[in-house]
Amino acid sequence: MFLGVTLLIALIILPFGLGSYGLSLMISVLIFGLFAMSLDILIGYTGLVSFNHATFFGVGAYVVAILFYRGWDNFWLALPAAVAASVLLATVLGLVVLRSSGPYFLMITLAFGQMIFALAWKWRTFTGGDDGLPGIPRPDLGFPVSMWNEQNFYYLVLVFICLSFLLLRQLFRLPLGRAIIGVKESESRMQALGYNTWLLKYLAYVIAAGFAGLAGVLYVYYNGFISPQELNWTMSGMAILMVVIGGTGTLVGPVLGAGIILILQNLLSAYTERWPLVIGMLFVICVIHVKDGIAGYVMKLWEKGWKGYESPGSEKPN
Amino acid sequence: MKALEVRSLTKYYGEFQVLKNVSFSVEPGERRAIIGPNGAGKTTLFNIISGTLKPTLGKIFFFHRDVTYMSAYRRSRLGIGRTFQITNLFFNLSLMDNINLALQISNSSLNLEEFLRSWGFWEKRRTRVGNLSYGEQRQVELLLALAQSPKLILLDEPTAGMSPVETEAITRIITELPRDITILIIEHDMEVVFTLADSITVLHYGQILCEGTKEQVKSDPRVKEVYLGTAGEEV
Image (cartoon, rainbow over all chains, first blue to last red; front, side):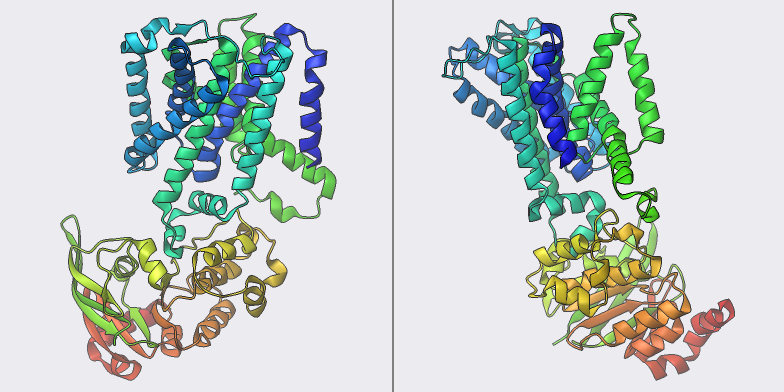
């Protein structure tokens, strides 16, 4: 709780200490943070490693852009339409991909992700093909606060990510959310208790897609441009890196992960083209030594500092 | 009225026949032990009754209702509970959260606090289940199944890996369960079997070798030959 409030205050006062470059970077950290947070629903809470999460991010972004090109530029219409499109696609894809599990699930999601990527690439009249759809303006919210001002846009994104976080945190406190966590812990036991585990995974898949779509919407307004690249597997892979490095099953961790990766990428790419090497090594270190990710590690340190070493049992590796 | 009826059950894993034409039935309230050497098909039989496996041939009836092709979770809601041979709990969740997952889905009127108090686990409700001792985890394994208020409970080696003291404790717990719960139990510990069970079915290479009351099975020469004799040497 204390950590959370501190983090929020830091995020609120941050724009005053940053130049326009830093602020722009922080906006993308938050947007990708939301994207990674939505993937955490699957990886960290449901136990599904999905490799097509970028599909829903991209579809959300494309819907906004396509609507804009057709003359629909109302933010309050475009946003729900885009999220609904992502959700709808997930309800269809989920029927197919959730027939499999484990590595097969990973492969089949990858296959469907690449199919949608190819569709965006080839369907030139609709998606602009590999040229993408440029020139998407910042949204007009209907009240006199310009979103062209980076600081205002930053706060808009911050509001969305905070609301998403609160909604998801609440979800995982409700019986439905507890049941989804149960599936990750032991699917066979959940079935033995009378849960339709397929349905629970399906719901999680659809919910995650909706929040990924929301992140996509914010992204296209921020970036002003969407291309098939945002639907590619590299985006899904990047999101997985963010979740794992930041800490699965924490919601906040993936946002930290997004921050670490994007900031490192920006810093390192000034010196070397080989920056993915460093991120790759960071990933390896996290997987081997910090299994709960950075967020898990910080929380453990926090608890230790707070409670001392009175409960050695809780340090037992899982 | 039979609580459970298994009719001509046959199961192949590829070419290998695990169960051969197995038929038996259990009365409501009965406590039936399924015994047999390793590889006799006991756990496969349990998985087919609980619904995680489908039989190649044959049918399963639960209180005269054909459940052969019903999914595992639906059978559970009808009242078939089970425990697992290899402890299968929500290890990263607290004990309270574990039991709540069982309570929130079942239509049982159990109260969490009363339930945990009656089993002496109330003080440990906030403990992560992965941090409980192995013996406690085996008890929670049973508790989770009981929290759903099942009509039939399948116990897959409840005493597996337990110390003699813990075995005695869990045997007593099972013995004291209310008689409206029908119990099917797989167990290797003969002492536990003879304490708990009203009747025994002996499986051998996927076939029923013999079936009857404790005394009948004890005195059956074929059982002595394939099972009890060797079991004695193992101990």
